[in-house]
Amino acid sequence: MARVKIDLPEEFIFSTEIEVRIGDVLAGRHLGNHSLIAMLNEAHLRFLRANGFPELLIDGLTFINADLAIVYESEAFHWDVLRIDIAVTDFHKYGCDFFYRVTNKRTDKVVAVAKTGMLFFDYEREKVAEVPQGFKSLFQST
Image 1: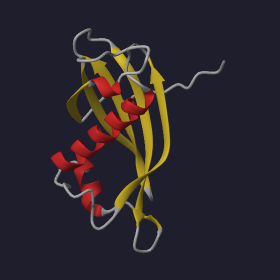
Image 2: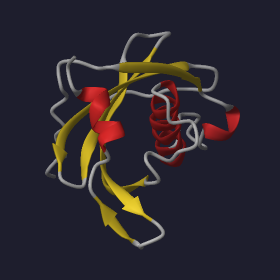
Image 3: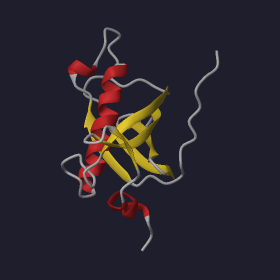
C-alpha cells in the first residue's frame, strides 16, 4: 500500500493546545478522524485570530480547502492535550499550504502530521481570489 508522505517545514510559527473531549473519541477509545480534522480547523482559526483576523475574513476574502492530507503516527485518548504547531508555506497566486504537527503533551509523541492546501475565495464573486496583501504581510520579513 502506498502511503502519503508529508515533508514538514523546519520552522513552525504558531502553536495552540486542544484537549481531546469524550465526543472526539471513537469506539476504539482513541481520537477519531473527524475530530482531528475539526481540531486542525480550530487551530487554523486560532492562528488567524492571533494574527489580527478574528472575523475569518482577510481583506473581505475567506479560505476554502483545496486539499487535505493526514498521516497518523500514534493514538490520542480522552483527556489528552494536543499541541498543534502550524507552518504556512508554498505561496502561489491564489493561496498557500498550511502544515500541522500534532503532538500529545502527555507522551510527547507525534499523533499526526497534516497539510491543507488553502485558497482564498471571494463569495460575492463566487470565485477564487489572489492572496490579499494583508495576509502576505504576515510572512514578509521587516
